[in-house]
Amino acid sequence: MAFLADALSRVKPSATIAVSQKARELKAKGRDVIGLGAGEPDFDTPDNIKQAAIDAINRGETKYTPVSGIPELREAIVKKFKRENNLDYTAAQTIVGTGGKQILFNAFMATLNAGDEVIITAPYWVSYPEMVALCNGTPVFIEATQENNFKVTAADLEKAITPKTKWFLFNSPSNPSGAAYSNDELKALTDVLLKHSHVWVLTDDMYEHLTYGDFKFVSPAEVEPKLYDRTLTMNGVSKAYAMTGWRIGYAAGPLELIKAMDMIQGQQTSGACSVAQWAAVEALNGPQDFIPANKKIFEGRRDLVVSMLNQAKGITCPSPEGAFYVYPSCAGLIGKTAPSGKVIETDEDFVTELLETEGVAVVHGSAFGLGPNFRISYATSEDLLEEACKRIQRFCANVR
Image (cartoon, rainbow, N blue to C red; front, top):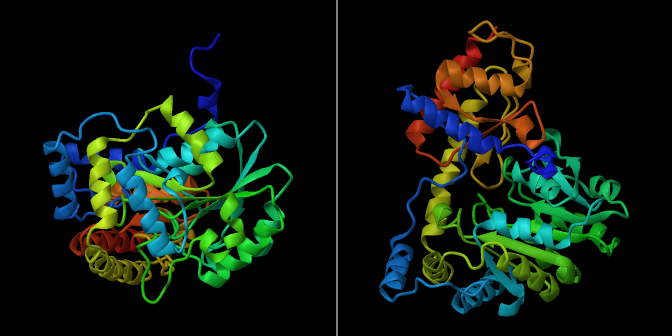
């Protein structure tokens, strides 16, 4: 009898975590490494949010909380969805988890049976298919090509739906591509979903506040209110509020589903960190003026990286609508020889050689389900991004 669970054979380790760890190990050995693998803002958590946490500690808010979150945070979530997404929920329809990951995991655990299918667009966040597999579901992938700006069409979605489809997992702006769907693009998808009443929508809106130029973010249940009763809208404070380490995600949806997720969480972690929840109350209810200021900085970084990567031999890099990632293609370098003498046969070869030769850590696109590409997080300083892009240009120029 094997000691480890069979479920472990269905999943892979997180590639993004692995790249960050490799960069840390090389730095510890004295290597000059620029890590562009981590998906977290380099900004500090705003002072008013930190102060709210300190105040909570001083008030003694350090005990267990209700499984689904403190009432004050659930009310703040209700107000947020109404204020920013024109979605009406009650506090009972909300749930708070230890990061967005737990929200997604609990939703799948509460709903998936063996053979149930979850449609996922590729490129995808590395954890999506692994969560589905751990919960006995079957990931079904729709390829969103670079030629279509990493977005799927209504025809793509229609073709992927079967009688076994339980969820369509939707992420806009996207990790890893930064692609974001306009109102019209999303309406085309929701029109398809209206025809298939057995398919639910799980929308990951974590990068909602990070869109650039005149782009306007919209969420599926906002675009098509008829999907309200079968949509779980997930968000969190990690990205827009620079609170990755606070580990607070949240969602709102049909009461029956929220109750099921609450039951699972009650036997799993119980409530999220009490102090972090009070910080999240301030994040959602407090001043929001730093968000557009941070967006402007991110937009400048995006433009810098896209411009410099498109000047690198063999690289093509679209300019995404949102998030803080670019997803360039290295197709022009496949089959060629790196400075080390190794032939670059895959995008994983490319990122490995780039790290070893120039000390730039990025994530290979095949980990996200679509290559030959690689993901760069531009959530770091312009100086580091400029130096990293110079190194990428130099590496590509020396490929033969």
